[in-house]
Length: 403
Image 1: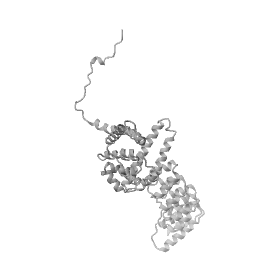
Image 2 (image 1 turned 90 degrees about the vertical axis):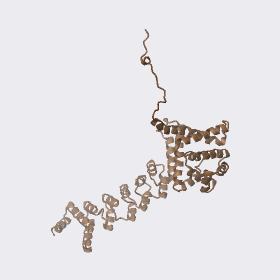
Image 3 (image 1 turned 30 degrees about the horizontal axis):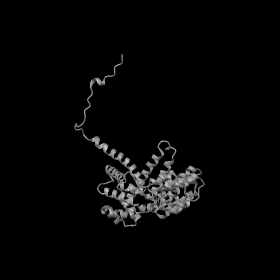
């Protein structure tokens, strides 16, 4: 009874501090109440009374007491969400009883801080994520993308990439999303490649042609590597998009074969030649030279190029090019030498692009193979089969000055 009288005194006080204490007491009591309905009704009536208080401090105390309550009255929380910004931001960010429709309505004509508060909620439904992205604000979109706990559909990520591809922060956030589709990832990487080519910080430090070659090779490796991963995961849309966009050329096919990405190579050939993938795999594994050349010719390759790729396929059957760097180097060296000998050093026009590419790759593969073998060589124990360096004592003396 004494406590109730104390509460009445606080709630009727002219002091804002006293009334805010009473508002918090009522809110906390309502949040933890599990008694009779008439008691809950009395607490609700008291809450409505404090909701109409003219003091911001009182309404803030009421909101604080109900902020995390799962049983908070939704009508009261909606009213508080429309209150002064300092109260509304806390309510829309933390209140669990607000529905998506309530939050989407709050997004309309809201200030930046209010939108950021909604984007910072512990859980966001796909519908709410779509509403936030639809605002087309770069800062909000970046914040949403940086939250890996959120599920964002492939279509939504593709739309974001299409709209904000030139924004480097959003582009980085998109590339960090593991669920980003391979084709969209490739498109973003192509933008990064172009930006590096024209970046002022790089100009003058790397020769333009060398920079272009390094970025081209890195981009090709990424394209074929992602293609192999997509095929292993039985996602065929990536290769289909590449072929439809005419992004698969001789260089890409050679890169895939040299690096042992046979599944991606086979998928591209099956799409270009309009043949079943199973038949292409069978020919790559067991087909003779004539059948391989016929299949490659059907995919649009010129006859000299068909001969080259057929030879590469046959060489690749006897080793694992995915892991054996030395084997990659030996095979490419053999192909280059075969071309030189076969054409007496006069490489045909149809093979110029492939020959230049293989020649460039041969140098890079030689370096890679050397780096891979150096640690093994260094770990070998000396067995005494080396030349001892014999130094005469007088050779260590400094030269004498002339008299």
